[in-house]
Length: 243
Image (cartoon, rainbow, N blue to C red; front, side, top):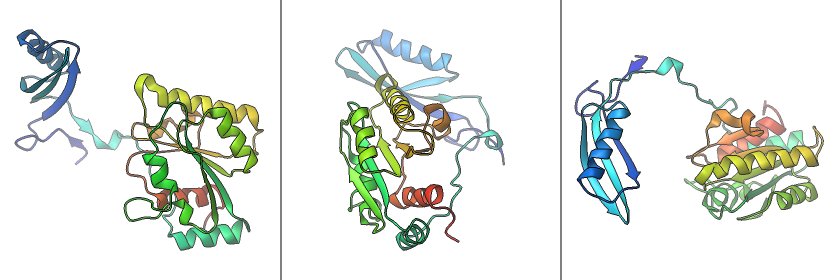
């Protein structure tokens, strides 16, 4: 089945739930505005099921029917195009192909102080039952932490002769994650000639994996990524096929 529509109470009924906040104090006019917005977004009928005052704002949950269909054959995604390796396999390939440790520098750049993502990938503790890249014997990892400036990141990458730079971005207000990433990739292009630049990888819950070329990076990872996936990609991109 390539054509689908949302499932709410029964198959194919098109029912969806939508939440949003309006900059209006909670009253009947605000509730009417929420319904009007839902109608304009294609929900008909739209039922207001929850409204919560938030200072001078109001948070709404609306439930209703949409008539839109989705063709799954036309959905564009980035499929993993490299084998998923174990830690032992990653170390073996690096040792055999590079004959030295692979240098990785990671950071949260700009004003972003959320290190949960970069720590989950880099730190020994890891995430989801997988240990982080610090546990890989053939990886040399430098975790610069939070609120790192782009010039400091470039300089550290240069000093450590980084093969790969991993940047985490969680803060997305006013598209800060996109602006910071473009600034970072432009700084590396300016500081280092082609062929000398490290592999640039960004990750965060609100990145679009299809935007790698637009942002000037080599790969984008989104929510749910594990250290093993990142390590396998590093091997694929920098050391070649494990066979």
